[in-house]
Amino acid sequence: MISESLIEDVNGKIAYLYLNRPKVGNALNFQIVEELTDALNRAEEDPRIKVIVISGVGKVFCAGADLKVLNSILENSTVENKNDSEALMNLFLTIRNLKKPVIAKVNGHAIAGGAGLASACHLIVSSNEAKFGFTEVKIGFVPAQIMFFVKQRVSETDLFDLFLTGKLITAEYAKEIRLINESVELEKLDERVEQLANSLVKNSSGTSMRFTLEMMSKINGMGLESALQYAATVNTLSRSTEACKFGVGNFVKKEPSDWSMVNF
Image 1 (cartoon, rainbow, N blue to C red):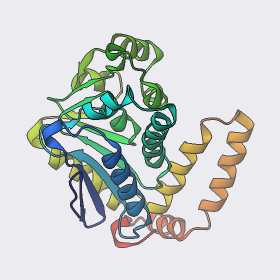
Image 2: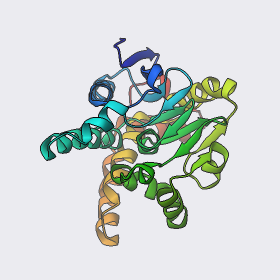
Image 3: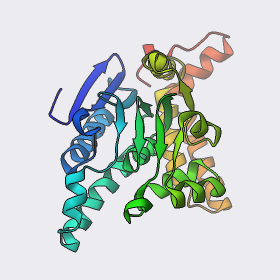
């Protein structure tokens, strides 16, 4: 499926979603935010799909907010700005509430909201030529909606540095501070992301990943006792699943489990 803003492609059990606005650095506007949110929800509901990859067409992953959007902010009413902000919030919330892993394939620079989009994903693999930056402070803006996700990834020391200076950092440095998972040569990026996605498809139970992602989404705000009680409930539920019977059964028989051959 191809639109002016987004390309959707399914290869086996992997859904690839490409931001398709290369002439403006795949900048975010209301249309692309809505289309990406809808595409993610479709992938979540599609039983064929086990892993989702988000990337950009062209040389930039995502340059942040579209200039037309930034211009409109100055003229919009409070209600209009709130609606626009909530659309982006829903996109990030959708990613984190998905029960299928989302990989950000960062093919080029990821700036402001673009860096936030990558940070909201579960795994980030970047070209070593990409740069990351939270540049909102340089234009009188606030990295508000992305702060939660970045705060989960980097230390508070690095968070203050990135958010208050708005500086750009290399992919290698982003990996060093654990903002991203991996940095590879650009010509090897497609191969590495495909390898990672296929590894999840083959080596990880879809049911187990769903439980894990849901648990990680919910457990952050819990106290110790509540978290452990919730963990005990999830542990109990997981033991009665077809996935557990299949995986433990193979483990006991000392046989590998190929999770690409089953739908759980």
